[in-house]
Length: 63
Image (tube, rainbow, N blue to C red; front, top):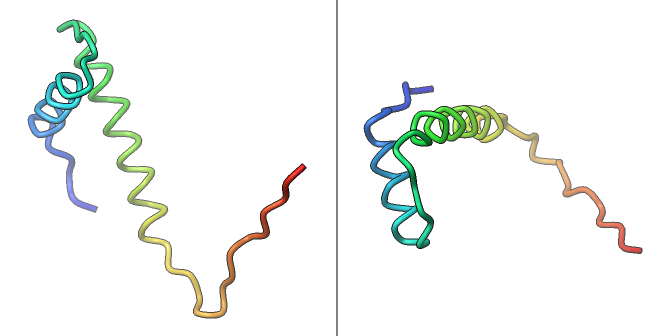
């Protein structure tokens, strides 16, 4: 997996907050960036896992 670009994450955080109208304090940026980087690494791990061709989706149970 490639290294996550902190500057790109910060631009994304600021852009997303602006687009969604979420107030953003400067002190929050490092924590948000760290959380997002961890989430992206975990998502990459799941995305890289290859399923065999005979795999089927799990059933959906409704109450």
